[in-house]
Amino acid sequence: LSLSDGRLALAAFEAPIEAIALDARVHDGALDLTRGSATIGDGTVELIGSVQPLTAEPNISWKLAVKNIAIERLLPARAPHEPRLRGRVSTTAEGRAVGLSWPRISQTLSGTGRLQVHQASIENLNVVRAALGRLSIIPGLVELLETRLPESARAKLTARDTAIQPIDVPLTIQDGRMWCQNVKLTTDTMELEGGGFCGLDRTWEAPMRLRIAADLSAPMVKSVNQLGGLTNSQGQLEFPVAFRHQPPHVFPDLEYVATRLIQGQAQQFIGNLFER
Image 1 (cartoon, helix red, strand yellow):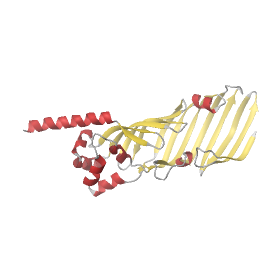
Image 2: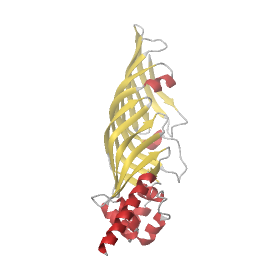
Image 3: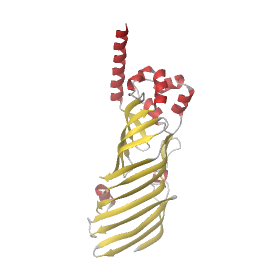
Image 4: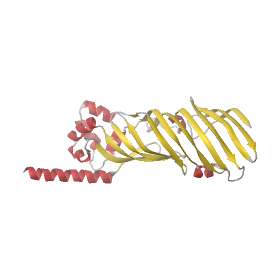
């Protein structure tokens, strides 16, 4: 069995899958995919595997290599103002599944591999600004910072996008989800550390710890002193956040933030009493 120069357009993808080529053979009640390849934009996908036995519930083994695909081509089109992931993704992975229908395969899909992303950014989302903007315990926090921060710090707070340094992490595929743990995302204004999953339906959730760079945290605390309760031993503003949904949105842990701010105010009050 063979196919060459195939093309598939999916409503869920911004770009079509092109140059599809397949070589497979059937023998002894099994199917071997000896070559599977395609292009998405200027990136490539290669897949080999086997399906055996050819029954309603066959066992599938597979190996996948994705090279330099633009993330945005794997996502639905978005309105110009909405948050959007950009970058180049590569991965190698191998694993198993059971079944012939996609719902069954997606439920039983499992494997391990490695994920690499470079030239990564989140357009139309300044993560630091978005996280601070949801700290409802300090009403109008972002607006206060914009009026009080020095120009160099204000420029970082008002930047439109979040550029992320290259990522190279192990991944696990289980129950229709790709999981990454011990992830560290770094920018010039912050660090995110944690993990999360991306579903095959492209929903995702990533609980992480946000640490705002010390050289940005310091003027923020000076401008709004209540924030001092959130600083760690390195002088960084630090609190848990979660990324959810598609497009990405960031949600701080408000219970944690409220507790830390109250503790900070109590410590300051006690300190003032002793100074008297």
